[in-house]
Length: 112
Image 1 (spheres, rainbow, N blue to C red):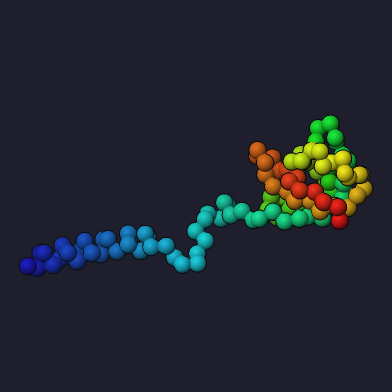
Image 2 (image 1 turned 180 degrees about the vertical axis):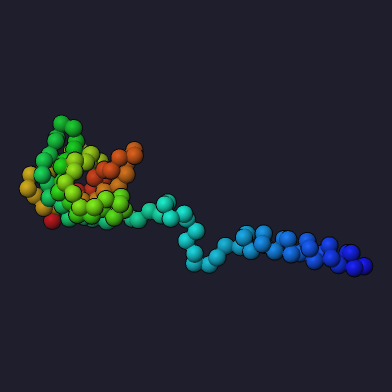
């Protein structure tokens, strides 16, 4: 009888971590830190150059948190290339950036 009790105790003890590991923790974001994605937010920017032929725009912009980019001046592809005709160089805008086909892209561009 002692041997059976010891085996049952050992099996119970061995299966306890599995039971706890399978239980999700309430309110915990279980994504790895590198895969946490922030929602795109409008970023203040200034149009520096418009390339209607290629559908790109050079913007002097603030920090783009969802892409992990600091403030800088950079050329971006624009998702709606036709919208570029409504803007001019030197214009203050709000730009929303996201990754499209692995490239940082302006997905929305609006006048300030």
